[in-house]
Structures are given as C-alpha cells and as structure tokens.
Amino acid sequence: MILDCKATCGISSPAKGVSFEEEPAMLKEANEFVAQNDQFDAAATARTMVDLPSELRTYTTVKSHYCKGGNILGSELPEAAADLCFTKCSIDPTLPGCSDMDTADSGAICLPESACRELCSLRNDCFGIDVFLGGNRCFLNVEGSAPDGCKSQFETANLGPSTSYKFLAKAGTTVERMLQDGTGLSSDDILRFMPVSFESGGSYKVCFCDSALLPAGQQYCHAESDYSVEIGELIVSGVSCLLKESDFRRRTCYNMFHGGLMCSDTLKYPQEAVAAAGVKPSAFAFP
Image (cartoon, rainbow, N blue to C red; front, side, top):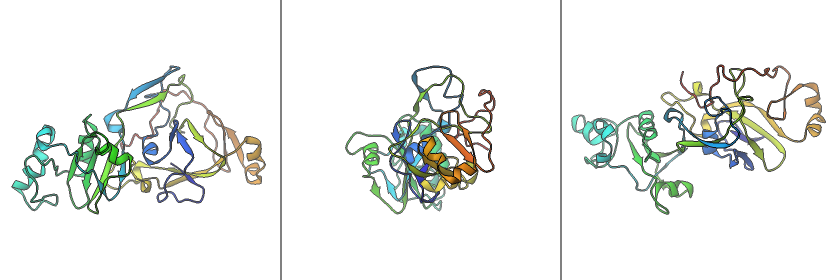
C-alpha cells in the first residue's frame, strides 16, 4: 500500500493519484495486488485472464456496515447445513451467535470469520459477507442487481450502517495480468510489483502487510490496519532530480529490474536469479 509521505502505516488510507495495474490503488486494489511470480506470469506477450485460486482470494473490509438484503438462504447452503445457526442453536441456544429471529431458511451461519470467508471463496455466487462482531455468526451475500444489490451498495458506499457487523467484499475470481518473458519475477530475496504509476511527482511512503503479524485466525490482508510494516520512502522523480538530493548522493543506488533506483545505506539490490526457484506470490499467507 502506498501512502502520502506524512501518513502512518497501519492507520492511514492509500494516497490518491496512485494506480496499480491501471486501477486507482485504493484498499481493494492493494489487497489484490500480487507480486510478479511464476504462477501468474509465465512466458507470453499478451494480457490474459488468470484464475485466482480460492485460497488466495482476498476481501476488502468495510467496518460498521452490512449488505441490506441479498442473503443466501439456508436452503441454498447445503455445504453449511450443519453449521446454520438455526441447526446449532436448536441444540445449544447459549452459543454466542444465536438469535431468536433465526429460521431454517434465514441463512445465518454460526462459524468464525475465517470459515465464513472459506465458504464464500468457494462459491461463485458469493459477493460478500456480513460478519457479526459479537460472536461466530455471518451471512453470505449474492452480488444482486443495480441499484439495490450488494455490489452496487458496496461500490456506491451505500451499505447499511451497523455497529454490530462489518462487511467483507470478495475480490474477483480472476485477475488480468500482463504476462512476462520469465524474467523480472519475484524471488526468495525480493518481491517485485508492477505496474505502478503516479499522476504527479512527490514523496510517498510504502507500507506492507505481513501475514505473520495479522490477528489470530486471520490469514489475509483486509483493512488499512493490516498494512502496519513501513518499508521505506518512495520518491517519484526523474533520476537526475533524485540524485541532486544530497541524502541520496550519500547512499548507494542500484538500478532496479523494472526501472527506477533503490537507494540504501545498508541494503544491496539482489542479483538477478532464475525466477523458477522459490517464487511466491505476496498474498501466499500460509505458515
């Protein structure tokens, strides 16, 4: 995630005027921005649609909101029949996700957030999830049609307000990638992200989401608070302008594979290695 230079990693929202793969680099795009890797970026010269494995699908969090309508009915969730709140609460009504309003067809699922995300990721008709903050309870939602569907509510910031729920919007099941020639991909030593573009020059801050620092039970990056690791400063400028800065003349600068300079007092830019060995997408969050 790229922030304004005076913003704070883990708190602030993305900077305006920045684009990832030709899309405004907001939270949703940051969550979906995967480093160049040999799983998605094979030898080719044209754009292609690459299926995003369900375990790598990400979600954008909208705090204190829920989708107004669009719940998938309990009768349409055979894979979660045993975990419906109506089923579980008829056995133990003291479970934290139970409600007297639940019926056999209400669609309320009494599972933790991680399990609800897994169910939604495996269903093509699931657009997002209403997650209850007070216990193991969620609703899966379909995309619906404009202007009242969940997708329209999400895109127009018209979700229903609620202090008891948060809404998770699922990323698309496919991503469009400009395939490379098998070089310039990520390695065990460095993650390469491209293309990134800026409307104007200036100073920015680069923040990273480290899966090892996420809250217990959360595998993937969802909210601004997950991007808590400050990587360094990013300056958008011509090379000659950059090197006029006395601070950068004191550092050692290296030409990066996809353009620009990496400058540091202590770090050395890794030598190009064979991309096929040890390449991992940045969203690969398993221990």
